[in-house]
Image (cartoon, rainbow, N blue to C red):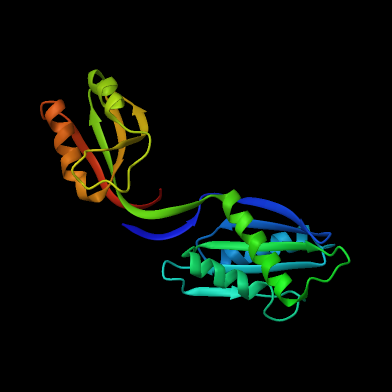
Length: 217
């Protein structure tokens, strides 16, 4: 089940509107402190810009929502970006749109469209993804079974699966006296995955760790 949406990685995107250059800087964050540090970093990097407009939404329930217009007319830049993020269900993200004024005024509506469209371009570049709770297991088994499990594993979990198909991803492999696989799967089928490993290894596989974690899907 999707808990919320966020961005996969840091990114930036630029567009020119009526000779003004707008560059959206986007970073995934886990706290207001991280977001504040990112905003300060961008403002320091682009000291010569006409405006560095920040917006942030943090928390799985969108608990923290903050923005500034940074000298643009009130309500025309930062606030619309926050509203867009919340409407799209995107959180744990900080956005700073840097503007270099090109000499042509955009008007209130034009500014709103320019900043929100720039932020959307930045989000697209960063990759909007779903955050879901998944099951993570460390399973120790003999080397002789490794190739079989690798062939059975999928590259990416199908989050729309109905729970009847046994799908798992091998996220990491450690080589010791035996092979230790980090396996992730959707929570509703984790018992089926454990049973599969046990059946194939004739009960010799060892479950070393079991956790429920949040993962970007």
